[in-house]
Amino acid sequence: MTRYSALSVFRHALSGNRTWGRAWRDPDPKPYYDVVIVGGGGHGLATAYYLAKEHGITNVAIVEKGWLGGGNTGRNTTIVRSNYMMPGNTMFYERSMQLWENLSQDLNYNVMISQRGQYNLCHSPGQMDAARRRGNIMRANGIDAELFDRAEVQRRLPYLDYSEKARFPIHGAIYQSRAGTARHDAVAWGFARGADRHGVDILQRREVTGYLFDGGKIVGVQTNRGDIRAGKVALCVAGHSGHLTQMAGLRLPIETHCLQAFVTEPYKPLVDTVISFGAAHFYVSQSDKGGLVLGGDLDMYNSYAQRGGLPVVEHTLASAKALMPCVSRLKLLRHWAGVMDMSMDGSPFITRTPVEGLYLNGGWNYGGFKATPASGWCFAWTIAKDEPHEDNAEFTLDRFERGYQIDEKGVGPQTNAH
Amino acid sequence: MIRINCPVCGLRNETEFTYGADATVSRPAMDENEMKPWLDYVFNRTNPRGWHKEYWHHVQGCRQWLVLERNTLTHEIGACELAREVTE
Image (cartoon, rainbow over all chains, first blue to last red; front, top):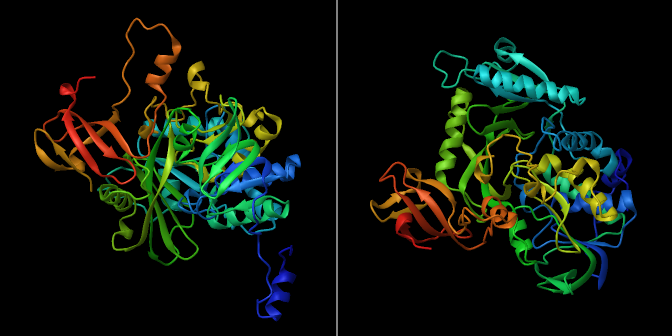
């Protein structure tokens, strides 16, 4: 396989870019794999990549019902950050941030990581106190965090509404300078190419319809194009975790909800960072093409539909205008939705399950994209060693039974409140 | 926009309602001492891809709690009843 470099770009340019090879193969499945990963999004592809690279397990297949990165990997708002404060979350997301920082070099694929910084705005003294606490916890764990007062935020982000009429006055912000954005499609493609290079088979347009059981143990998957036997079956299907575990007889502390995102028409450079509104669920960044990328709140009712309702469109755009009055005349160019595992405490699962042979990676709530590299890294560890790494040790299913929920927002067991 | 056929108010827009919760889970008897039924009640959900029975509150209408059947894959709306008249 060609190693991508400035020289290879130059050499292929001389031949009119007609000689580039495929980035990954399209193989026929073998009858047996040591590990079958269900779901060819970022998490599944990253899991395969790290299984091969870190643990030498290369007899691995990824089974994907559609195309690579066609689910939530291609539907998120591309934000990466590690500003978590609950034990169990903090160091996991920081591992992810550190993997992001070197991901392009590691994969030999440009994932366009841009550490442009992220502001979480505060709109009350209470929110400032909470932000200070969060920042202190982050800094105690070696993660960068800065607290800015209103004047400093106004100096850095002059285009927000600081007027007397502002619906939610800005009191300050907590800032993580290493946070930013990455190109989501490139993340899927980079991991796919990396996994394929290690011999992993990527099987697209193949939907898992059930499992093969031997006694109580899962020994493979049934797909719409034939059965595949496997030593271990690993689910990376966030959004559909409930559906795929139900086939194995498991009920999860998860409900599936839909979340919408929006891109405006291209605009001159305006937002050179990532901004999260603290008064409503709203965040904004600007893509390299110039479109403002907007994200909002859940539709609040369970949904697998991958399309949202208009009330949330209005709510998100009202939030945008409340925060940045200057965007009021921008037109929306695109609008879409993804379906997500909303877990009962707002935190994910990377764990073995009560069903032998079945491993679960899911429950990513709003935040799956930023977790992609560490999720794959920790899931690969869990699959290879049959025990969690310390960074995902708390992401178990039995934490609810033991009373160890990781509820970052402190809202209790209601999935749409996180 | 989902439109819900409230038994009291008739066909109304989704924005008048608040989603409550999964209506298929029910609280165990108060003298239930086993962990599992409580765990299932508080945390675990069937989360179906298809028809789902759920509580909605007509908070900006008649303020009644409703049990609505709704398809989570198509957003199609089915039967809607007053929660207090649902016996199960």
